[in-house]
Length: 80
Image (cartoon, rainbow, N blue to C red; front, side, top):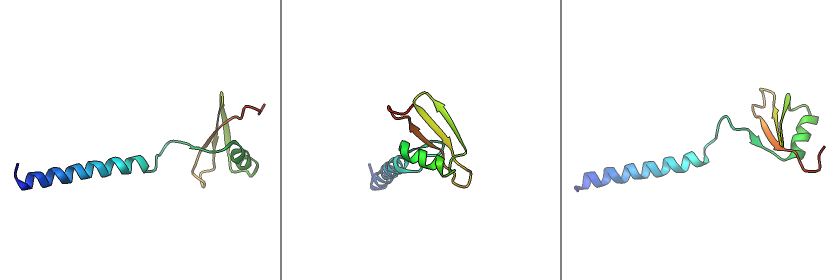
């Protein structure tokens, strides 16, 4: 292989590695934030949650558009 081919392969490999690293740590859209149950209750009490959906042990809340986040939490074993 000549030097130009080696340099191109090196840059391509470096780009692939950097892309893999950044994709692991980048912001993920569409996935709700997981928060503690106590924080979720605090958000509900302070009117920072518009609606709540129960799916078994999963509790999902919809925040106002201005906050732009949908928290998810699990019901604690002691809650009724």
